[in-house]
Image (cartoon, rainbow, N blue to C red; front, side):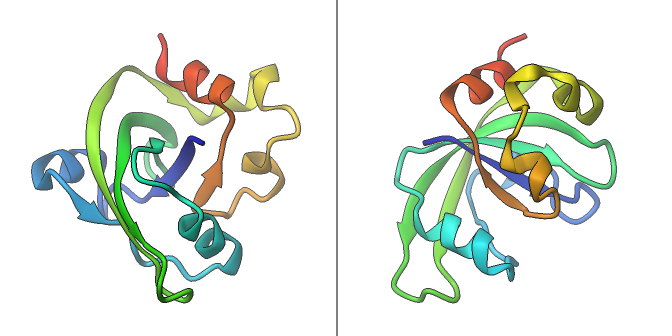
Amino acid sequence: MPYLLKTEPNKYSYDDLVRDGETTWDGISNNQALLTLRNMKKGDKLVIYHSNIGKAAVGTAKVVSVDPSDPKNPIVRIAPVKKLKREKPLAEIRESSIFKGSILFRQFRLSVVPITEEQYDWLTLS
């Protein structure tokens, strides 16, 4: 299952992930977002979305490993895959019918959101 991960680019951007090569996706406190993290599997596809500044999907990544042994702090390691050829801004995502009814807009403050394969393809293909 693919996921969309939100990050504030002035705190940790997609370029930071590329520079680091791999990171632990942490700093999550919302229970629903933590449950989503615990459910991730090695190899799951990710879209990285810059929130607050930029407000756009900017790149793809993958789950490298998941250690769900501590339910309050699952350790999810991710690595970058590629920067999107064209960023997908929030306004464009919101207008797309493929996101109608998506949890992405029903619970917009969630920083970790499951998305469908079709939504992943729409976000990542130009």
